[in-house]
Amino acid sequence: MSKIVSTFSLSDYAGELICGVDEAGRGPLAGPVMAAAVILDPAHPIVGLRDSKKLSEAKRDQLAIEIKQYALAWAVAECSEQEIDELNILQATMLAMRRAVEALSITPTLALIDGNRCPVMAVRSEAIVKGDDKVAAISAASILAKTARDHRLAKLHLEYPQYGLDQHKGYPTALHLARLREHGVSAIHRKSYAPVKALLIS
Image (tube, rainbow, N blue to C red; front, top):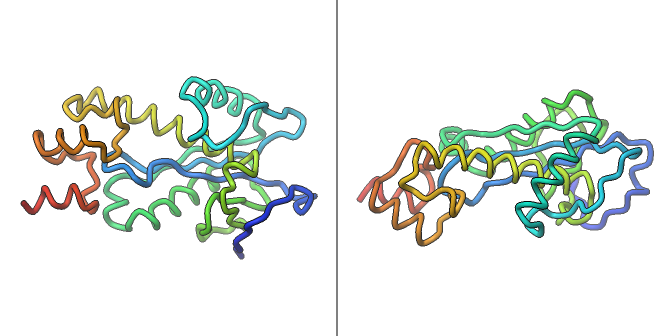
């Protein structure tokens, strides 16, 4: 069962073992989409949790260490470029989220998902609009998904330095598009995305 929630109050969830779920990397032309699920420990609150996009890279990295240290459970999962091309990015994102929840060492009673859609999974779920700024567990998941994806792209940059992935993390910047035109499409590019597909058929 799933539903969409636009207003959030923690008091509405008394007695629930909540995991927050968020993703990173829906928009890039290269690399996987990643998702994280986090069950925070009420006995170890983490100061400074918020939407990962509103934090500096250094602050995200610091908070990621704290989340992994103090959370009751956390997991990061992904869908590959090939899965994104086969399923479409929405379905691949939902699958990555489901994989993250299923990888948790503790089974939550409720998954709170950032956004307006929930993955199909055994755990009950609710979608929280702008949840990454409203729910600490979703903020934590946002941070883990973003830092995990950034670290993956740093490794991919070492394998594919010609695309400048260290500068744009796979997003369709002017630099990335120029390098794509110069060097062609690689195995880590999402071939179903319009700018990449255009190069394949040109």
